[in-house]
Length: 495
Image 1 (tube, rainbow, N blue to C red):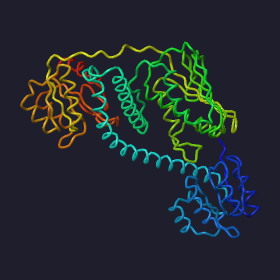
Image 2 (image 1 turned 90 degrees about the horizontal axis):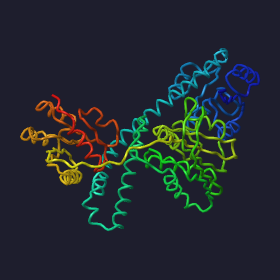
Image 3 (image 1 turned 120 degrees about the horizontal axis):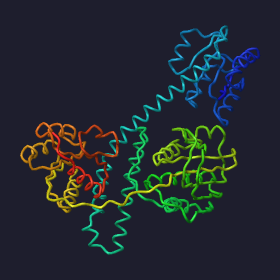
Image 4 (image 1 turned 30 degrees about the horizontal axis):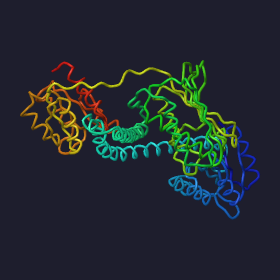
């Protein structure tokens, strides 16, 4: 794509020369005063690079550079000079100047502009990568604590004994609590996976996509100026998917549509089933074929420019003054995790837009059916007291004998005494005194065939290297815990 180059220059001969030299790599926009320069920067669409003369009447290239550093630090800046010495230019480069060109060596200009743009893009990518890493570290700690808070709620709401004591209304309220807690945990997990560039499917089950879309649409009911029109096919098949993740996708699309109509307009939502044949879609790397549920979200709002269409699904790209550039990339990652695709159409600015989600039609196996234990002994290692108590009560309710340790060192002490009688060790990955990884290694020194289930937070890399037969991610429910126990107990002992 041709570069958009802003040239700050007042000498006509240099304007002509620079424009001719740069014609093959981009379009040159020329200004010659401070006022015109600032007006261009504040207008729609930033330039890809700025090339500026070091000296203009009443304004200098250095002043222009410092203004850009303050207002638009992401734009590379190249200085043209016939007067500044190398030492001064080198000092400016340490402050962020991309390059400088001596006016008697203007033939360097095209290569210098290309290299400056590539250098700045690389610098931004490194900055973004570092920012994502820092966010990931911070979020991992927050998620670990949040999941320890959510996990007991999930376990308690799933206990049959509690439900048996409630009437129909109480059970429905309990279902709502469980659904909300699960959604909170799944949202946290999805953000962490996105930050770390991972594509997780999460817990998937049979879903009616119309129900998911209708629930997400409720968010728009608060905005009275927005008219919502629907056209849903009556024979839409069910899909295999994650409720929380798909709810997040459609909520994001509806939020974007509401912002696009600027509070007054029409949003049209259509759901049907289509058979695609070699269709080119925006997030697909090759033509797509197959049977899909199609969910289209259209608005009559501000539309999308051709440049915006190119970058829509890139991380951090946003057309909003207060946007993060995370919504659509996260949505695309979720849809991709469901083996689906996203597409977008917009004629241009002021012409509205249509975002379409394609989800494959497929079957799903039946729901989980728990199996009771047969008196097997479980060593549970968990430093969160409430979570340890809930897990202990749950496993005992389903026929297991449970020993509890508050940290790895205490678990090791119990195993030394009771090791021959312990059938499975269930251990958290992150604990004080001795973490799960060290604990497992020491247990295997005592008994090499010990069966282990590891428990991790939503930060998906945490606990990935645990030497465990199964890994549970918080917040997990009763079914997931019992399934893991059943599966691990069925495996033969191996030394």
